[in-house]
Amino acid sequence: MPGILEKLRILGEAAKYDLCASTASPRAHTPGSIGRVAASGVCHSFLPDGRCISLLKVLITNQCIHDCAYCINSTSNRTDFKKNVTSFKPDELARLTIAFYLRNYIEGLFLSSGVGKSAECQAEIIYETLKLLRKNYNFDGYIHAKVLPGIGRDELRRISELADRVSLNVELPNKSRFSETCSTKDYDNDIIKVTKLLPEFKTQGLIPAGYTTQYVIGAAEETDKELLESIFSFYDTNWEFKRQYYSTCLPIQSEIRVFPREFFRREHRLYQIDWLRRIYKFSPKELFTILNDDGYIPLREDPKVSLARNNTELFPLDVNIANYRELMRVPGIGHLSATRIIKLQKQKVTITKAEQLKSIGVVLKRALPFLTIGSKTQLTMEKFWQT
Image (cartoon, rainbow, N blue to C red; front, side, top):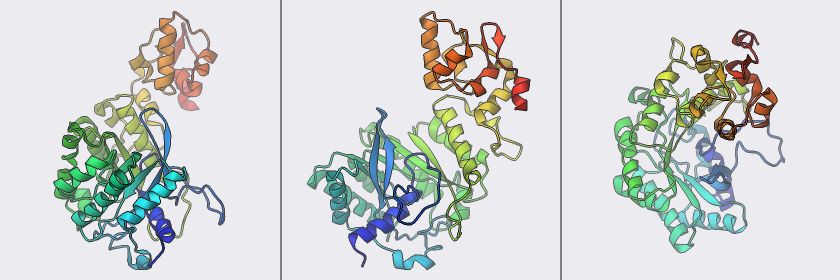
């Protein structure tokens, strides 16, 4: 039976596939080095006030009864890893969390798990861990708990009473794609039925930091159109998801440990589309126009630039009279720089030079073809498309 630090090494490594913030670019690992993020037991999350906090990120067990093709802990992929199957007891993980907290290593806990013997049994173990932290140790730190597929209503409620945020990984965009990768879970009963309980608990004052989900990109033959239909549905219905995350499906048996950046480009484009919908408030109808005939996001071009290319009649905008919504549609202008431009307009400050835009955070190379400063366009669109 491995000791507690060996359990932490194994279960911290296994937790790296669950996301609570955007993925970091992988880099080569030198034995004996420090600062490695790919296989770490600590992750970072951001609070509503913008503060970044460190979380102990760990599975309570890597044992699982499901056969998900994309998961290293599934019954279909576990043959070469049986010697590393292990679990924390609730009191072990609670004591470890508090020990790390008291040493100022962490400020909270990100707790995930395999589905052990059953969803109900494992949910009880997760609940007991959170209960020990909240009641016995009086721990008021941030806790993000993963919800297991097929969990019952009562078990979900009890976990929601103790966690700040919960998440249930939908993994695939629809029932058909879901069945391509797993034969032991039911999309409607184990995922959607549980998901529909989350808004109800949120309105009752539980899970104050909301709830999220995650997709495994490339686990089946899903198109980006299928993914976006699911993503927009979760944002635009009364389900009110706080965030959705995207994780590239990596070959489990691959000898490659550092993949080229291009391998993750589809994941990156999905995050950009997510941002355009969630923060920039582009409509789903507009965002679907980016897709090619096969239903995929073009990988060679930023989606915001693609949208601008498809709506050239809107540009160029006069930066001194354009409103916030119009400015947010310009590549190279984000919320902060658009807010600063509007503030200058209200102060009757006229922008006369491109350098003024640069000083307030506008990315000139991307923005100039779509703006006029006074009566002058700084760079024609035709020339921009040639660069």
